[in-house]
Image (cartoon, rainbow, N blue to C red; front, side, top):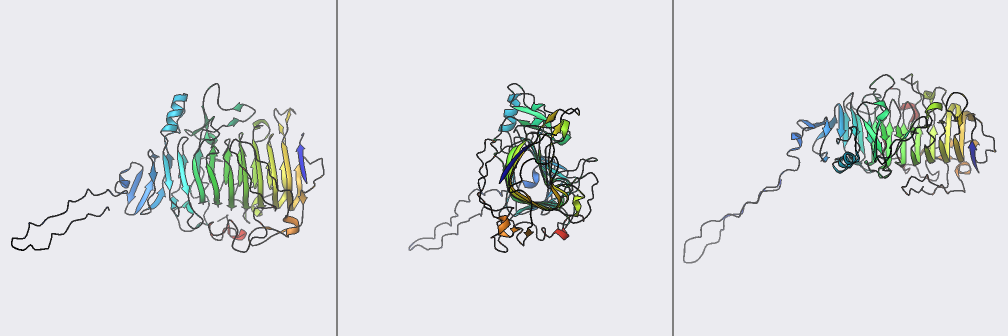
Length: 485
């Protein structure tokens, strides 16, 4: 049931005592007394609008510039983002271990309470600098939402996105190795080539905060040609960061992308993402479980996009042999936006293990797997891919480019359906017996939930009770109503 190939080619109230009213016999009433007035407790939000990074207009409050102190968004205001909003002062190019330690010690935390809806103006993005944290922990009954300023969630490309940067390791493309050198605890990697945004270091356990029960919608606005923002980007983000129950909806570029780092993720929903939904590269070492990916049924808006469910690593001369990930219980449902792309592209000397997952609706292959020609002269670095209980449907073929040379076992094209909770049916296809999924060892001690089914959702789940229902954006999983607006 398993196979492994080596291919060749994150008011205090004022209390005033009343005058004593009781009389006394045989004498004048005593002089009235007053209880001492206690010191009034300050309104915790009284100075909110005095912060240099907050602009207020009535009950509207907008975050701008650099958030240079711990700050919690108040439920008394409607919150907005405008321009490049940076949490902390760690974007700088570090030149010493002492400076790196100071940035960590002086990091700040932006806390977004459950149920908050943060709206972003155009040409806006939220950047969490290394050494600082975003604590955005919603609940299933009160998720946190980041979207554009207009009503509804049917837009696309209306603001940038969220970028988290940390001190975890990154590995350079082209076999250039670990970004840190000598005894340095830091390195200075530019975030996707964007000026002034540096990340990277030697701390695999680095903590950039919590993103849990969070919806990120309508983003991807570009800063330059072919430089759109991912909905959630992570550069050198460590496994101390929590990424769970995240819904990414209608983003022009990728949904969730890692550049190096070790942050694990569970329970992810992607709807209407026009480029890749999951993308990892530059020596990412981590684990991902329970992801539901639904592409749009419409034409793509950005000609430069290649809409795949999963893209791992970079091609040929940009290869990174240290990229290593384990994925389980992924469901990828293709749509017309795919425009001939495969469901997954695993390439450039990548190391991927995939379990109990399904791909459907890609007119090309369900998966394309490529090695790396490192010098254009035929010097090959191999992609190593292990798959167990991975099935496909409505693809031209299961694999393309470099075909497997061993028996497919529990992998290959199958006949199956997707039901209302987006589970794979019938159970005769979706149930598996070999339930152990070994995690990629990134130092986190991550363990996979034990599942005995293929896909993101247990097929025995009752209607309305799937893990993704009730907190994501309503109607988002209706494939004919997402993206391409």
